[in-house]
Image (cartoon, rainbow, N blue to C red; front, side, top):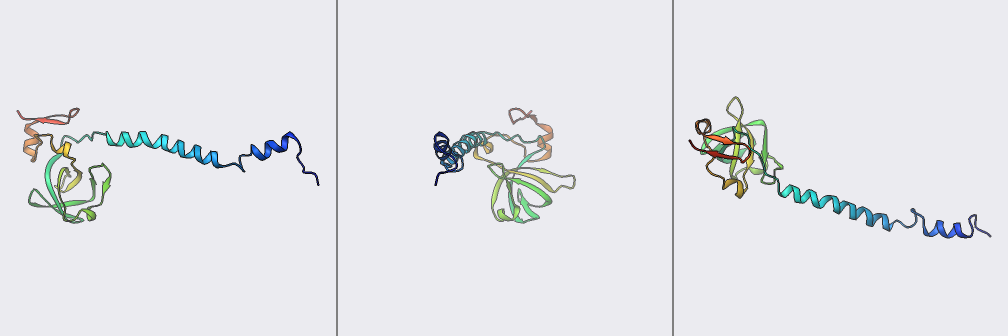
Length: 151
């Protein structure tokens, strides 16, 4: 019985088929994924977080998903509080219960904690940083360098 395709075309179809020889596609996909992932990882490690001018520094202990102690004073978290970890990814308040954290934070109009950034050692080394609203109003802030200067 003679195959439907013969001669030169038969060898091309069997050896050059994308459906039969799939290994090179897998290798290409793995190489492309790695090439795209490496720059993203390097870039994520080198990102400097920019804090708003109204961000204050404090010691935060989360007692429950809606209650905390901020600088040894009872405080409330807003229902939509955004807590960013040292890697700048969102953290759930329930996962941080009991941990003592050095943070930058902002307050909403009702005086509740609205946004929180857990500081890295490099960010914590930047001093001075205001701990009260009175200090923040009296000092000057450079948003590009992310530093405060006392008058």
